Image (cartoon, rainbow, N blue to C red; front, side):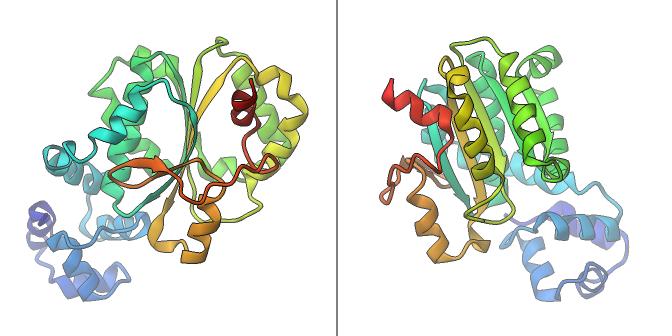
Length: 270
């Protein structure tokens, strides 16, 4: 969908597409496609363009999401229905459209609040700020503070594994037992032995402490930057595969106890 608002801002600054593209360190063709809606900017590109044209980069996500809401609603109903169910487990989300990513993250949080689930969002600060802005207009601040915990990904990744374990342990210990805990983690790149695998190996020694809770855990990746061979490897580790429009059983899933979040595979054995 054409970004008329972006064209108006550029023209009000009396700048050409080529000038904006040059100042934002991208080629003119890429910028032109952003204006016409054929492509979506990455977080870095969005921030660079916003700096050149002097507007809040969140405007990209706010305006685009509102424009697409009605159009996408019927297509995303299946995903929303999954979030509204009492199902739990691990989901690999490979998104192609950041607008849809944002829409699903909001749906994930809203349905979590509806069901009284605790929600942990591990994401980058620009995305967290957008989610907060959107939520304030949809639910009461008291509900946000009661059920949602925002974790800055940049800071989180600088922690030692021991500190990450202690953080999760303290946080979950404070939750009421017997309730589903939702975790949404936005990953920049795929690594077979990343922070989660390190966390799992340590938490596995504390399994009894997590038996009373169930988890709905989503790990999201930009599909365009994940190599095809990695797609297959990733799908072997997750029972569910999520796209921008549906959640299905992963066709390549292979149970691997050493890789999976311990609280999840306990549920299957209970």
